Length: 421
Image (cartoon, rainbow, N blue to C red; front, side, top):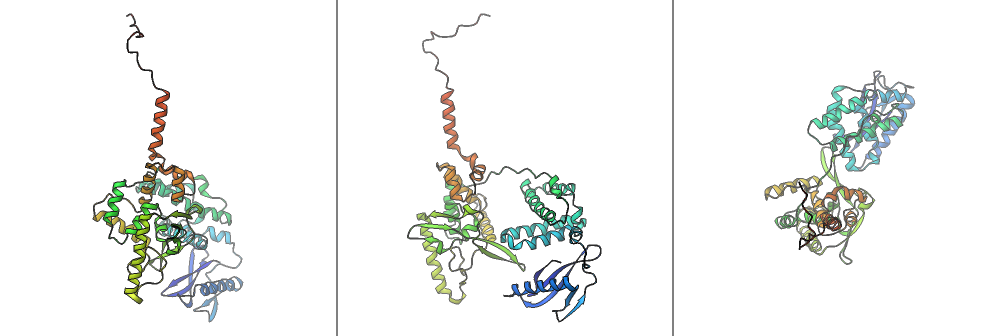
């Protein structure tokens, strides 16, 4: 048997994945009586005890475990787990698969997978009532084709293809299925990505326009350093050395939906090894950082107990000391551009802007890779190679010199005679 803990009405419940004789999932909710705050480990321990007793005796607790009863519609003792999993509805298997992998993937990745499964995948597959064992290559291709017909790019289809393929591959590894239907489905071809970016004049106009905006410092850091949104929000004062003039990129902030509410999630697990990097402290940014530190100190003294002291070490906080939510940054930036009638780009396009300006001013591609924290040179080259104009000018000059035609003679002595008609 498998199960998980879930909060409902402020209390932890043990949710068990039971199935009837037809293989239909019959989840059973058992109250632990434990309040949500500070009791997750206790609830998980109770879940393990409940599962262990059920597998040994076939009994489940009634209420909060004061008495037990035999479960008539649960999984009969001795039934093959392989048959059970293959007979699960696809959407139920995916939800259980994701929960079991929650501890092994980053919070942002988990949140993304969860939205995909509970959103588009559920909407498509649940009405079909398809079981795990019934999924064929043709069914997968129809699903991916539907994504494209709705106007989304193949990159979107690729994301769904990758997640579903991994889930089915795990089902094969655990002998739930004999083979993976995705082995016979071609991965959608990736679109060529050409990022949007600002010119030097447009960046300067943006920074001047947003001078008094709450996101001014975030915008400035993203434009100067090309940091990802999560990296901007993850900057801490302890990572900034005003003496040796260095900034260490070592944390990120994403967000996750918890009980219907989006909250920031701080992590020191970066996107890749190259994302951990030390940057020089640029003078213009240093001055803004000093102003922000003074502003935070002033607000903390002014607001007293009302000031949030949970994020005192973080740079990008609001007037109440709260850490900016990633989605707030995205939405507020979009509204800022719209309000001042500036060219519409995404906040992430400030990263592309930084790279394009460096490239246009002669910074080698390898140095741009290190500045942005890309894991490989090919990633940087794939995105920005079409912008590398100066190297193309040099190539043009070289080939022009090699193939340059000799100048015609001035006196006409060597003029080619006319051919007789």
